[in-house]
Length: 486
Image 1 (cartoon, rainbow, N blue to C red):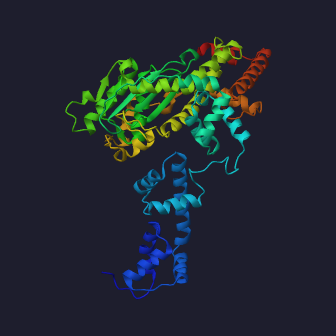
Image 2 (cartoon, rainbow, N blue to C red):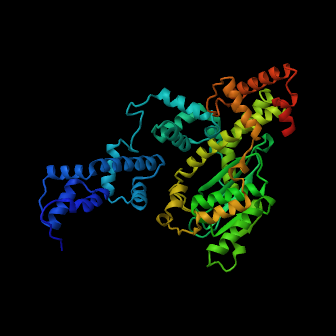
Image 3 (cartoon, one colour):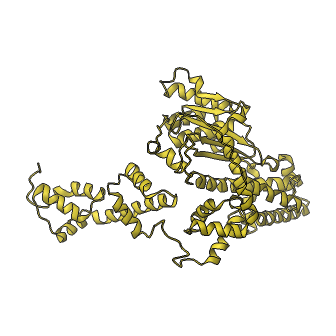
């Protein structure tokens, strides 16, 4: 039964504010007031009251925020139903799916479109974009479905699958034929249905020849990559332990079980997992079972990830690095050049692999009736909304303060533990850029060797000038200090 109110005064502000926040239109709010309080309010009066209460500006801000969320989820490749579910579950969205579809149309966001048919782009531009993608490690070995995703994420282009497939085949027929001859060898993996029941971790050493290593974490059920960390070593238990605690904070808890190989680098991580399980998973009768040591060859999902990374990214990158070595653009035996290589390539690879990880997590898996794991959705979707694909959340909540306590106890230097270049080198490079007024662009896979050559010339010029002055200490030049670091 409605409460009796005589006029549309300030006593309605809180209720109207709530109705606006819930996404109701002005007409719907006026109808609600009419039916609940038997008060007829004109649109003009309602607009004036909204201005007085600051709700018009607030409503616009909320609309902009909502559109930002919609665009983000649309760009991730979620279906309309998945976008609606995400908004409803995570952002208190109360409108219907049909209303969301109208909003998407008003934002010119639609999947049933082709930018070639709509004359938003010409074929030559699309071909040029594909050629650029082919020059990147991620795009060199990509199939047409992956290329279509990269065209969207990198250039905002919507092109039909068949068009992308034809362009890919015409530009790179040999690789297309090689991919078509692959034979699927199915591996069966059994796990409890749901994310965060098992995390799988392992190192990747295929770039170790060049002084770079990777360490990865993966949720087994959803196949979501939780993190890939680039460094100059993946054998230090302090590094992997630190990575683990960062994930505990970002995910809000720990898995019910970790699987790793029995290497020295996993000791800290295993200790943290068992310790936190003992404190926060009271249902676990034996916390030591929360960490499982296994052979690397049995750690299937993370090994499968490295296999995909090799095909889609690392293989082409390794070929490029070997080519650079053969052409003598870079001399890895020179301690100064090696230091400069690490200075440029570790952060560059981290950025590149973060992007690759995002694309991997948001890539929609094809439906596979034989798989026991989620298909016909992205890894990100399965991880965030397991109930929608028949899963059950397995995360054991752990407060960030608990992870921070362990971090301060074991890794008091914080992010400094991950530093790959000596402090003196970082400071000297920054001074060199300032004093010589060097204009260095942000490194990417296309310009990194030009930046390498530019910085190396600047360092050599500095050393030459420094050594030409007999009053200067020769041990302070770049090359001498780099030789001590190696």
